[in-house]
Length: 396
Image 1 (cartoon, rainbow, N blue to C red):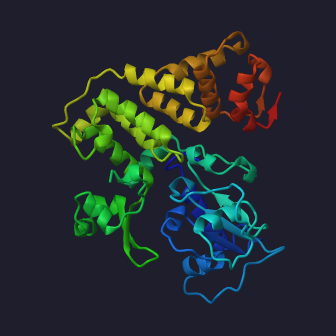
Image 2 (image 1 turned 90 degrees about the vertical axis):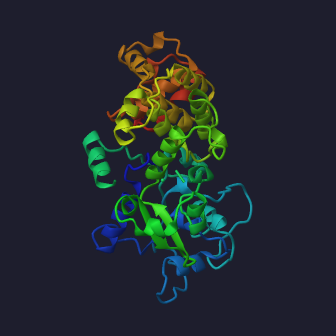
């Protein structure tokens, strides 16, 4: 797992390329990439073999079955956070036959639960918030991609110069009617040779309809944040009719309600845009933009109060990222407590425990050993620190 734009899909493509060129993983007979973005488009029931013949082995000689026993098959489900169908892991129909016709959702969950092709290898990529959609019982190993340094980020954004209500709906792929609903002319999207070709792409879907998408989900998330930031009392935007202060609180609540975290990065972009320093940069592009000097303290206090009440570690971590966007010093205070070397003497609040976990997880230093005795011993401390303990080789 890893944050947006960190290189998860690139890693998938690199593995496939190295395998295809005979460089790595030659013990694997088949690598079968099934991105959630494409699986979302399949509305008809099918069997696993039917799905593979139509969407992976398209145009090739029919494959009667997949290798069993010593034969290795790797399924790659890229972009769990982009999944738009429900993944239900409760006991139900047990699918064991690769030729049985059922829903795409049941095919995916049956593979993950090892009812279907028990010997298959499964690789799933996801943003952190959506990773919890799969119960821990079915996960053997978790790898976190930590991200790029500032220089690498700048190189990426220099090279790759989505708002489209569409993000709130969960739309990642757009048809002609979706674009027209936003007041855009489809022909203009195809004709523009500058910005649109850099952030927007057209391709044929499995149903032969033209579909449109952005080159990366984070582009849609930034444009969505910019749109919400700029709109006034637009009757079409009933979600954010409030004042800017209430608008930010509404965005925090909306993001927390999302099961797969699809509004997390949108929220961080929106909060970042609320700072006057960032608005000054925007004013170069939008000369008529009126700078908002509203104090963000109310929003910071609201986020801290929400951290106290939030039980999800992944959602709490995103809220701390939000505080960082707002240039709050809460994380710095936690770092000072941590560096004091006398944590056991501190009675940390619930939010401070969450902050401590955030600091430890985001630390660039590898956690080879975690000494629990340094911390005040309590059930709350142990529960809050579990994510850190899991990510270390030795816990004392």
